[in-house]
Length: 168
Image (cartoon, rainbow, N blue to C red; front, side, top):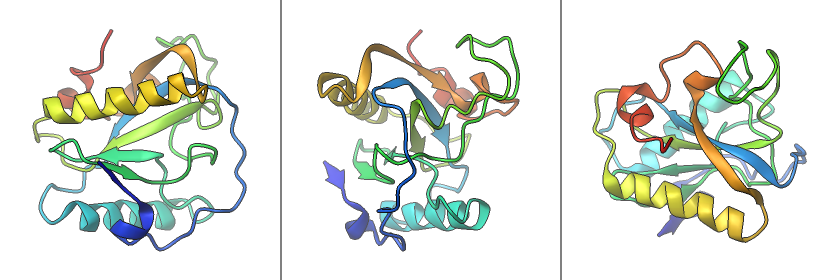
């Protein structure tokens, strides 16, 4: 199940060029920390509004989102750079230099919920299918691994519940 931007009511078209490196080298898991009440579409609009206020040229910072039931939502296109994952310390699990802009060579998926919320098996399965589809299509490198936002920056994101579900 894929909810398109038009279906959740995106304010922006996300057609402007913000070049990325293809294929992607890694995937990042994020949590929006917006609460889990309301419809998936309304939470997506909230995430987009936050992105527009923080990153006016970018809008929504992520490429996709996955709801509790595994429903996947399109955010910005895979070929459009986000604005949410800059490496803020080294050494790190990725071997990236401090200051590396991972928005160019990584793709990001967000969980539209709060830290205490459970991360469901359906969310994890949908995220894995999303990444696998990119690898099969040549949009991500074979062997591209998942990381949490906290692996690049001193943040709790994707919170303990999300981080514990990342396959190591």
